[in-house]
Image (tube, rainbow, N blue to C red):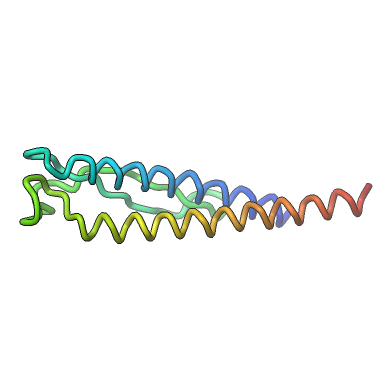
Amino acid sequence: MMSISSLSSGLSGLIANTKALDSTANNIANVNTNGYQPEVANFEQGSNNGVTVHISKAGAAAASTDSQSGTDLAKETVNSIQYAASFKLNAHVVKTADQVMGTLINTKA
């Protein structure tokens, strides 16, 4: 059923973006931690047209001159805006799928 697939896809997006936002928040919180290696969120297509995210360390190559750690505040700010917008869009998908399923249930009842 299409609405169940949409609901599943939207939920996977909510979960993935929550993890990515957590990672970005952790990077920002450690901006002044010497030797800190920031985390990177890598999104991939999951099952049922959903999305998954894998969090990994950026490594020494991602070191920034803006701070004592490898955290780039400009990049983390952009990431947090992007992940929050994606979270909001996925929430709309879940809400719409829920409304469609409610309509289908009411029609069948």
